[in-house]
Amino acid sequence: MIAALAVLPHLRDDERDGRIRMLDFTLLFTWWIFIYVYAVVAWQTVHVDEVAYSANFNFAYLTEKLVLLVALAILAYTARGGWRQVYAQLLGASALYASSSYVANWAIGHKLYYSGSLYDIPLSVSTAWMAAVPLLALRLDLSDSKPSRPVLGVWITRLSMLALFSLLWAAIHSALDPELPPSVTAFRITVSLLTMVVMGVVVFSRQRLLRTELSLFLEKSRRSVDDLKALQEELIHSEKLASLGQLVGGAAHEINNPLTAMLGYSDLLSASTLPPEEQVQAAQIGEQVRRTTALVASLLTFARQAPAVLAAVDINPVLQTAARLLTPQLEAEGNSIRLELAPALPAVFADSNQVLHVCMHLAGQISAHLNRGTHSTLFVRTHSNGDVVMVDFCSCDPAARPLSFPSLFNPEAGNKPSTLSLSACCRIVNEHGGRLLQPSTPDELAFRMELRVAAKSASRAALAAPNRAAARSGS
Image 1: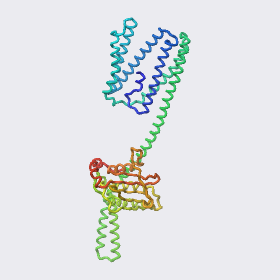
Image 2: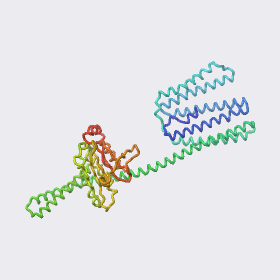
Image 3: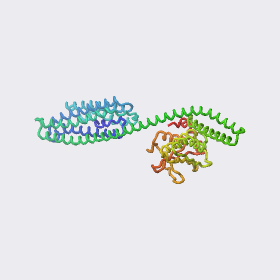
Image 4: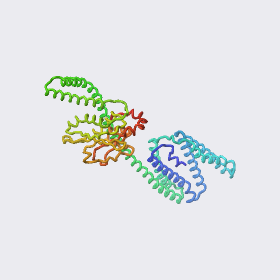
């Protein structure tokens, strides 16, 4: 029972701590058997001496009962919930058994004890009480367990080393005691050395397990620090993008005023009696002003931070807006974007602003890896298959080199997005009832966004509207 308490079942730990506590159980069990064999069995089998046997047996038995009672008292004090009741019941049963057995031994010494006497009643009650504790434990809630503390493992390690070194002291004490018979001396030295070997193996296994777990813990800590640094960089980048979005929104409103005046004047010039050459130039000015106005409107749409509003959305105009926003950056780098939009696509049930953010992020992930100055092209292609609308983003022509997208971003399966912005895109697409996939070949940087058509996903999306309303595209 003392060794079983070393397992500390009321502590909530993982598999690693459970294995360590089982080694502690083995260590304490081996050491306690050694104490009994060393002190008692030597006078029972090797050199028969009834007086020495009885004295050592009573001393070992008294020590065992005291250790058990002290251990149960400590556990009953430190445990909580149902475990405190279990330890308290075991403490009461063990205290009754210890006191009643002491009285029975006293009666035996004074020749007052006989089988079936009154001395057997408390012994029987304590035994039945101890056997009833597991039945009581079945009715208690033992789920409220305490977490293990590192100081506990430190003290167990110290006690293990103390128990191991006590074997050496026991062997030296037997060798230097002149009153011991030679057979008892040889027996105790042999038992001490054998037990030292067994406990040394157990201690070595325990320390090896601790060293392995410490190495894994340090490796996990290093990875956690790296992940935190990457997350910090992503958050800083996200804050910069959010500030830039607010700046763009304010600047776009200011740009709209002169653009409106320029558009009005160009229309007046086109309606006036100017020569044909000047009429053409006025029309060109109006066309460029309208293009700039559309770009500013796209910037305002992209910078808008508002709750999600789910409705039937045509994905093609959203992609055209994203292309207008990306074109100036791609042209500055010597690249371009090519849209291959399927006509008459069914509408999807989504929030256009959030879908625009996702398309911008996915296209930006690929455009960042395009070679500058080599006139690379970012391909965006839409098509449908049944009740699913698919949008492909890739750096190669999908018509010349078709790609398969079997791999789904799934953090629970270990396939986690590489960046925080991509993780946000996965969350938004999942909240819209769709999926975000990557190609089967890891060397190809491409994405496929799948969205359900409005007729198929409207009912399910309406149930999830409270969750989606809190979604944001900001990464």
